[in-house]
Image 1 (cartoon, helix red, strand yellow):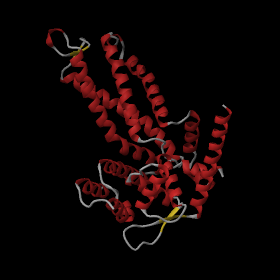
Image 2 (cartoon, chains in turn purple, blue):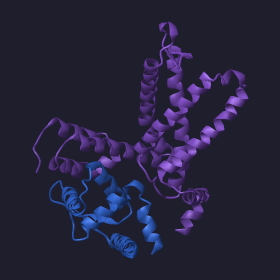
Image 3 (cartoon, rainbow over the protein chains, first blue to last red):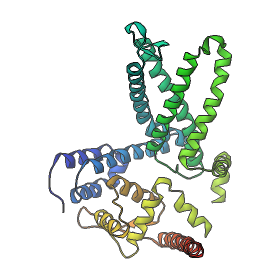
Length: 236
Length: 108
């Protein structure tokens, strides 16, 4: 039996209250008994917070339209983590670049080409969020395919968050180089738009690799997900 | 037989904790804390409370484990017949894979 009281135990008990009501109605008492029995600490607390998010995602995904279940569950589960990581990384990256590559005349800039001011800071954050949303769409599509096929995604959303970070770094470097080489002013808006296609493909490939899925897995799941639900039910 | 295997795999991120819970319940009913202790002894893994109950929720939803009446707050669970079949099939598969792996190592 673990020691009574303690801030972590109180936080863990509080985390159980963040679970969906329907879940708590069924498991609340025994979960609190488990928390009282086990050693308290930051790791089990974090474990509970994450699990609470998953149960909410599961509950909301079930209560919504069937074909949106996977999407809503995935988005709710990951959106906060991804947005936070993207914004944090944008700030860090901009700050590090500004320190490493100061412009002549004392003005902070990126590679001496892009002045670093609130305007470019906002662009960085905007870029981070746009990439986060694009990646999320890919991940949500995969999640939808899995759940529509009666399965769950293979890897944790935190894994996707980590993949996002590396993707963001790579894409930021790519865009900074484009600015430095002054590619953008020579391109039309349509060319810039089509220039994003390889980025989307790259994002999709990284997402699939992070999920541990093979191409065959994805095709099988997509085929199952496109099968009308009535046929799936009658088969089972 | 193949279908049973796929069902356990379909639990995604919960498939491993679910397997450990099924193994833990194979020798008799246990409540949550007893399961975490048993799993730690058997596999060296410490399941968090959220992971444990996430897996229990899904296992119960699929009818592979069932709760027993309890006199205090600690509710014990036991394997159902379906749960036993799923576990047996999974263990047989793992045994076959391990045998092939060991054979190949010996041949190398």
